[in-house]
Length: 135
Image (tube, rainbow, N blue to C red):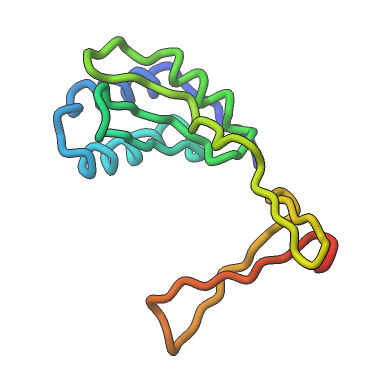
């Protein structure tokens, strides 16, 4: 994946769009900002925590390290806005999720998954888990 060259105008445009529309309902604001952020970096996403005071706008790269610098650059340019905070990425959920099954310790980082589709149950969610030692 190649890194995109970013311009300061796109950063400024993002924050101007936010400031001009921050009073919209959360769902509308989220859709607008996720569209606008793509003008800056296609690897970034906006999340909102609007049920708290102050509200929190989170810029995330969903764990894709090549975009982390863009996250921090965008947050560094954030304006000071009353009743809002801005975060680079989501906070860690704490310790890794581990469990033991049949004497084997399984760690979260050892697992991958594949979504499963079913024509009989199109609205159901199902996944198949894979342990890297047993694929």
